Length: 113
Image (cartoon, rainbow, N blue to C red; front, side, top):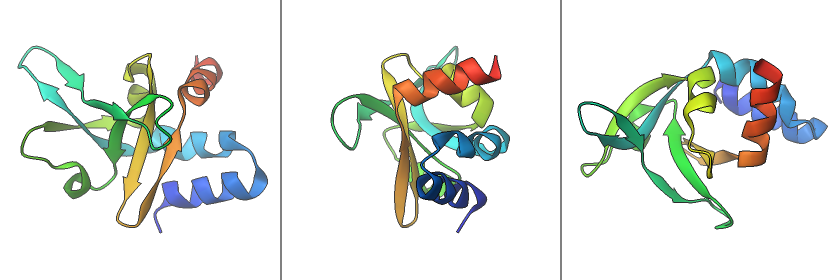
């Protein structure tokens, strides 16, 4: 289990999503998108609960490597700031994943700014 997965597990056990923030900010993720040479646009899909849209990321580039999309690495802090305003973040692992809602992203941004 990766450090980020362990932080999500601890956050769930203590019912405090803020516990993931230090590990998330120091992590490097790979994100799916469209690269048009001038700008990288995140690929947005429906979130697991289908109530909002999301960007898909992983610490393992193999999990977000698709022929139809580009991929780039991004730090956790940069990801929070760059995530589209109408979307959450789906963090995928080899077995499962975790989700950060747009409301949680906005709260994290208030904490780090």
